Image 1 (cartoon, helix red, strand yellow):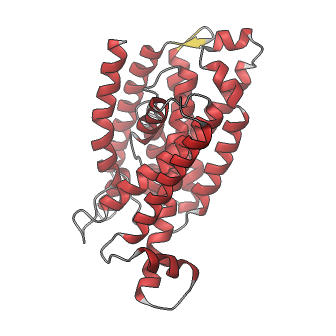
Image 2: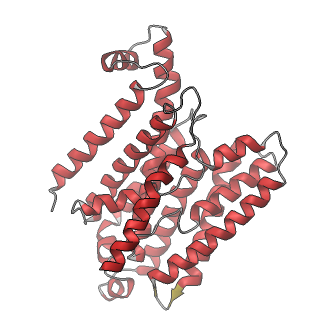
Image 3: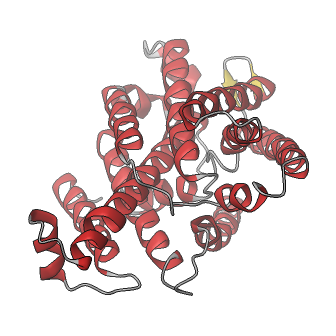
Length: 324
């Protein structure tokens, strides 16, 4: 088992290193000491503008989005008692993405994107869990199959929206759909959402530990499972909606990160949740750094790189569950 102080220290070190690397690496590499200088002083140089106006907002947004996705995945996994729970796999991201793309098609202002993404994510969550619920608990295999079907349905609706979209808007919509942080200039909204959801989840850490053995067992031990479900479902939907509204449908961060944290022996949610947030933020920052530098000056959608990481991990998890 990993000691709490050591686990948090390791997660903080990895997250800090990822943020610093994201600020240093790009079309114009900047040394570490210069990055620190530009963060705390304004000398009006080109490098200062690159760090303060381009890289810093993008890195902070990527960190917040990655933390939101990892947190949503961790919450879904514990309540479903299934390590394969993930906003992308279960179709929650698809519902949010469909809502935002519809808003783009109708020409609604960006202010509407986050509320509509929340509605789409919450509708998808209720569909998956409502169709899968049996009594007062859920069966993991049925939930995964239902989630895959719901995700396919959202994918079909997304394809319809794209097919009727004006040709002028289509490239931007497609790039956003695959995960895009190129226009990330306002990290405050996802950061506030991350802090709010994390605080709510940490306050329910003890109940989440008990719910890991099943909601029926948790109810027998005095946990108000109905309230816990509503709070956690809403929190996961809010985290997913905030992430999708800002960066598009980025997959597999919520699947990979909590599982890796648990593989380190971190089980208690008062420690697992913040470590998952730090790990998810670091993962997306590194993926976004690679996305904007691998074929520079062109940029890749960051969702492409997270999928390349997540797909083999997902298959490995399926194999691991079968062997168990």
